Length: 99
Length: 460
Image 1 (tube, rainbow over the protein chains, first blue to last red):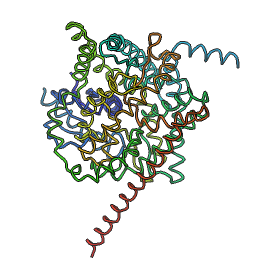
Image 2: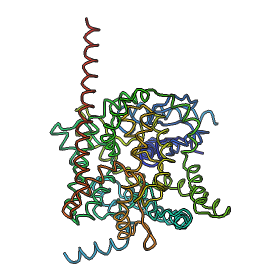
Image 3: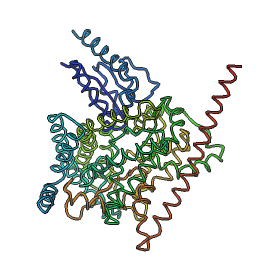
Image 4: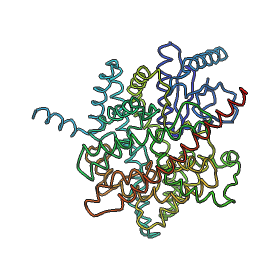
């Protein structure tokens, strides 16, 4: 099964789906098997179980165990490559553990 | 020429789920998408329209009987179904001229950047629909497509200006540098500013409490499925349904609120490649200049104050809907009112107590503007068959973004028919915007001066 990556925004419709579509395309081009899913921030904790990484576009004080990726980078293009590499590493680490 | 006109009329007669996908396939090919990707986007868009059509019919079929029953049980008539912003965006995209808004908005942005009238590059092309929404209202009032685009263009300019003015405050409040909000929901902060100015004079209102803990406790109620269920039950009780009917309405309402984002996501999926292509072009063109990137509001979503204000506004709006004379909308899918909480967050600089008071004061505005917009949105929905409505059924949104601005700028031409109210509101809004902007600019300069002084002190 492909690793699951979660990205959240206020409604799970516009911003998060923009990031999800973009990252899905980048992963496909890099031939990495993973599925990025856009969800509603209000319910995000329900979706994070079993996910390989969480792409967040907000600054939260809340500590999470899951690897966090800065989603703003994918919206502005600034620092995008570094964040994408972080994401790929997280997916690889997740897959290695699952095996 | 006649053949062309006939073909266009034929395509339009097929409904939004057919002609909008055709437009996006053409638009995709223009921005050099691969043919197969363009077709995929087009069909996804058709799916989005058809899915929304299904869902809106489902929602109105579930809620309308309860709303009708309430006329007898509690004597309140609220005939307008609240489809929320996802429904409004669906209807807006179905306007035959909608896609011309892309070149207009991008063109205005480029011109203003080149003329150094803005430092913001608006990367949020999804919210082009907000300009289309205003244009649709102008079009139905004045019957002029040209004027519709002029007003939409003015909105785009105000959005960039507002984004420029807010950037430093956003950076300070979120800790995220280089980005700002280009969404028109922020426009409401201008009329909220004088209210907050008054509230600040009361010392007791300058205190605060920890929003994080409280949000943790009540956050559950803002989740779509839970909120939908509660609303359905409340409507069922008010309509004096029996237990089985009430529970059924609860689950149906929960279903509607849960599925709205799931389906409207497909709009985004379809439009994302075009928006990415434009972003890339802008980056290449203006890569050497330091520009702020204009985004939609969600990156502010880490602020607990915003969520608390949203949750607070739910019962407040509901109560107002039942007691305010002249309101015709039964709040439902638009009840998660981000468009009131985000501007309050800026106007009150995150002070939660003043935010809650401000949200209470401004909640009626959303109901009245939602009521006023119902006829156009219903007419457009019917004419493009973007959504299927029963005869006589009305649809609108109880949380229209930037309601005062949108109402004033789309309706002010009614002065020719003797209705002065929108024009007066327009003047007042512009005055508030000027005062509020001055305050923001003062704050930015003070911040820059403090930073410079600090740098000088370090050097010395």
